[in-house]
Amino acid sequence: MINSITFGARYITNGSVQQRDLLTKVYSPRKVSIVQIDGVNEADVKAVSNAVKKWKNAVYAPAIRSMLDCIFAGFVSQKEQSVLAITTQKKNFNKLNSKKIIALAEIDKRNNDEIHIDYLEVNPKYAYPEKSRKYKGIGSCMLDFLKNFYKKTITLNSDFKVTEFYTRNKFHVMQEGKFDYIWNPENL
Image (tube, rainbow, N blue to C red; front, side, top):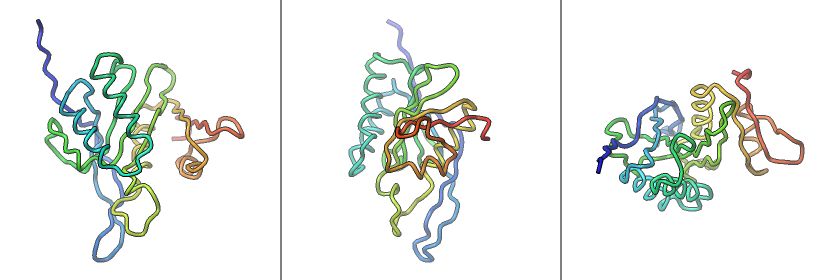
């Protein structure tokens, strides 16, 4: 039997979100880390699972966690599907801290010409325009990363509640009356 060693989440790059100062109540840039979750690493899968359990009112994060379970079980290849996270963690990504994960995205890479965002979810306590939220700009940070890293067409399906968010991030509705969006690298 061959033992394979996995090292956990792979740091990809830094990103930037806005963090609210508790005293001044003013937002300023904060560096975050964008990592690829290792779906065959039990600690990574557990960290994501623990994060998702704590995200009250999460809609898509449970589906992202389920995909990690499928990757971990060997039903799906990480070459086809990957899970990315934005975390406030700065080092030791081999021990991903579930409390510092602030966004997750599941990416379908099976088509060579484009990537498809199956799911994107920001921790709900940071996702909605509340005056007291600690961070903002997290979803845009993930989209900016995907645009610059993959440099190919990006597609996604969503619902009417987030149309403004995707159009603000240079995505266009693919067909009137439907909530399918597209972004082209020519928009860079």
